Image 1: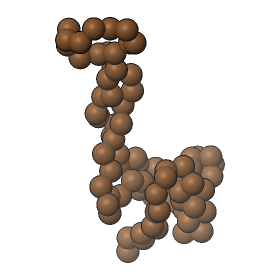
Image 2: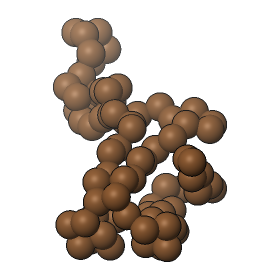
Image 3: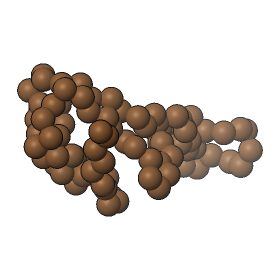
Image 4: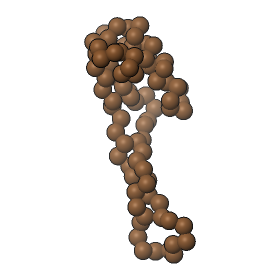
Length: 82
């Protein structure tokens, strides 16, 4: 999305990946605590705002969000604040 604006405007990401995903190596016996963190995920609820944009035209913002909407595996909606 930032490439679409060409350094004109601001983007705020309103989602933070704060839950660790842990995993143990194969052939390790039960017990001995949790495994090491392998990655991070974020819980996103229905209706949550993912991105905010400012100082961009409406057509550029709409085009950038349609390009970014292909990344997550869910439907997205464009909301404009007055």
